[in-house]
Amino acid sequence: MKTRMMIATVLLLAATGAGSSHAAGVVSGNICSSATLGSAPISVSLDGFGATNASTSSQVRVNCALPTDGSSFTFIELIAFDRSTVANVSCTIKGWDKDGDLVLTTEIATTGGGPGSGVQDHLIFGNLPPNIPNTTAKFLTSTCTIPAAVPLAGVTWLSHIVGFRII
Figure 1: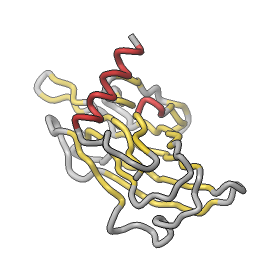
Figure 2: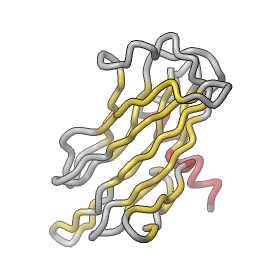
Figure 3: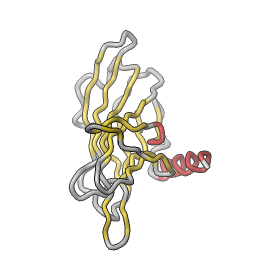
Figure 4: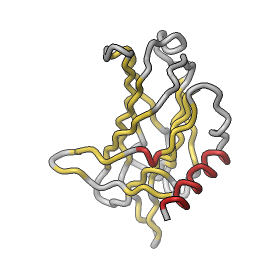
């Protein structure tokens, strides 16, 4: 079952054009794990669409390790389904150098979305911090918030983090 989920995620990333990276690469949303939001952790499910929030009452926070090959990169892309009308899928990305010093902090988020909306690719590109093209960041992490699912006309619309692309 887990193999099928990973294959589905890889196929979806390839279909969205996320498989053509040449630097650090594509990272599946299945690498994310639940983090504490408020007083207790809320479970995130990992499926063919990556990290998914099935709760209709609460957003979920996830931590995602973003492995890189150590080379410099010029943009980071969030690939997500944002089905909420009141909140976006949003992430804070941090990077550390080989000595453990924090050298990068930046934000990325979807915009719009809503029930039935398709995949969104959002880049940190024109608004990059000046140090990204020559960053010394070797280790990247992302802490993301996935909005609550939206029930509408008998269908529950789930938001997902499909993955990230680092180029």
